[in-house]
Length: 480
Image (cartoon, rainbow, N blue to C red; front, side):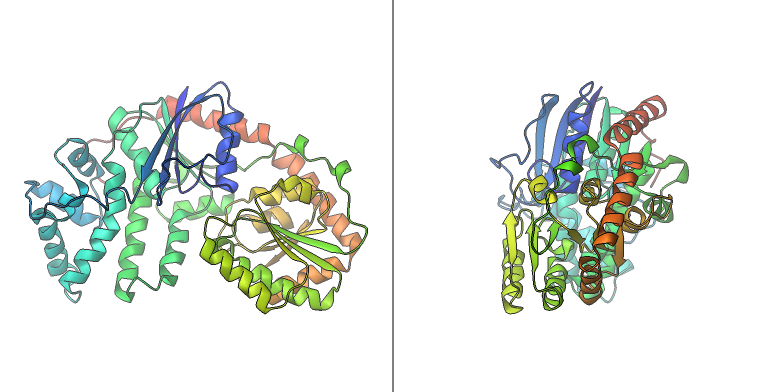
């Protein structure tokens, strides 16, 4: 089968959980051929792959969401949009239903010579004027025009595409990737599968609430807009998978039909993690976080917890293990914070061979604001390393054993509570027997429930189900 994997902001140019998952999927399904469709905010032309290219990866397609910003704009054109097309555009912002069939057909028909020309057209001007008159009477027209333009530009860049032809399309999130999966189904009448590692709309909602550049009255509009994009994928996907039951329940709450949903847990190749190779350091307690240095991973909470830990454990050593080039400004802020707190024995390793550190770490930490089912926890537990983690995604399920009897493998603390994180690290650092017990419990859980062969088997079954039952595009009268 030829499968088109659609990722947003990840593989193959960024390392981390989702990228590692995609690489693992491709390598462990040699019977399939894969086309990679990568959506990036930043220019990726000429960028190096962070992973070795799998032999069954046939093609690579990039969509750069800022690709149109330097175009010459011809303002004031008319595209003679129909009333039905106008309603479809209006429904993207605050409307109850969106006719995606009409939107897709408008862009793929070849009528649009330039996305920026359309956004500067009299037709788009009329759409914004109608929105202001009917739904946002208290919002200045100019503010609405520029906000709406920046909102829909990435979406229109995405759907102004001819997708590569494949037997099945698999989006690795909702958002733009989910809309592109829907577009491919529209173009080819082929099955479309959606997997969410985290709940995309919830993550975008958190970012928007914190964003200083979005004015207060536009935050709700942005949030509603991203929920609308997710609804597109939920409605048109033939099968929707999540990593754990809590995530599946959220998908259903957000409008995904329950009969489409299933859970497929992440899996790792346990055979690559050899507990007998662990060589603990003769002195000190060694504490590590395997993580990309980016805001959603909340590295600052880890650093603040380390500052408290070193006051209690004099021979503590700290490692932040992973790349920091993705957001250099945030990395510099983290370094400055560590220096201001006078943390001793702290190393930002950059990109390294993680298994070398798993061989000697006593405790691992995860401080993310949002997660799905972190591979790093599975890998750490496979090496019998206990965790202190924030209560996000399935971390509690993995560490506390909510649905199994293998026993506790770590502790859970609220998001951003660095003092509680520090307290749990100190307690584990002072109790070797508990660290060993947690480690054994964790490895038993992973080897029983979270193996790579089991994950691959379930995805192959999902593909077969989608291929058997799906791939039929809804009629133009059907709306989302």
